[in-house]
Length: 377
Image (cartoon, rainbow, N blue to C red):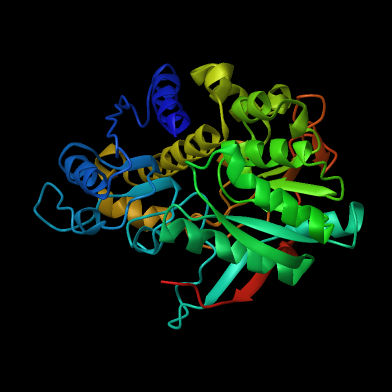
């Protein structure tokens, strides 16, 4: 997740070069969660003491955020620490009263049963219409944590409801080596599967594609990967086996920076070699922070920039676009966005395949699929 750190630090340099926010310099304190629940909590304790908000938060182990919710302001009131995360996997953070995730979780926390999800699924409709109606195959579940499993399963359930028949689901881990994917490649071949998705990282998909290539798998029409595959590392690891892999994105691709000022600003701030999907989303989190600060300053002056006003203002933002970097996103209302664009690896690059026009998204409301499911744990 280094891209998230680079993005937020780069954003501070960028915005300070333009005079800062509301006449104030932006200072970034970086706290490393070190893949540890304890360090994640310690980071929130330090941030409560030292910082106005946490921006671009990217932690898989944020399973206790009491210190953010109960964070006291300068008057001693438990106002809370504003959190604008780039990534959330733990329900306590997803449903936190102080958090405003840029990628709004699919779980409907207003349903007391806890079984309702609204999952963005536009790409499955596109696959069925433009690739093949005969979509059936496997989903690789990232089983490193219960939270990563439970974040991924609604994606798979929505895919099945939209267009894909299941040939099976398989647990994989970030530490798996390529030989782990041999039995999976064999199962794909035995089922003549036409669809395979990895919900894990770019290394997982690279190993899957390399093993499938070695085992002579030819039936798959759609190799589908999460945004983690939008990386130079995936292309380097998979080589020619990466060809044809689909990646969906919620932000304007880097290749279209010439027609997207916010993407160009991000790339200029971090350097193209440091840009990745996590970083792009963390940049949009910083832009959301900027928009809330600017609205507070316009309404109440610089003395009105308080944590309490931040929460009240953030809740009113229902059409956030990060200055055109993403499709409309109801961050304030905590509603998942239907907007997406689809890329496909071709000749070692990530050209756009849909929608055709650069810097645009498919934001059709029916792209959100309602799923009712009981998750493990």
